[in-house]
Image (cartoon, rainbow, N blue to C red):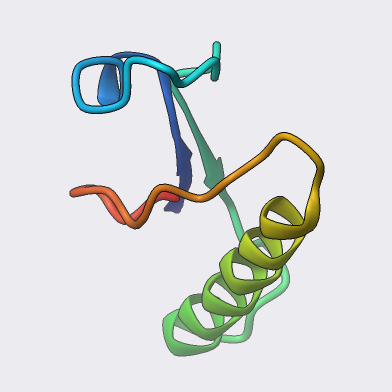
Length: 70
């Protein structure tokens, strides 16, 4: 498991303008050969998610949270 996105209670105090209604989302890698490959896959997925969010209208990435999510 890897935390990939955080919102809700994680962000409302520091970023009151945030309109993210979800608490958090996680990646669960099922096709990896081992834990190292799973970790590498989650890093690639999170980097791609960050690219998508940064180019989507009305979205912005506020950094990486304490639990590792965007």
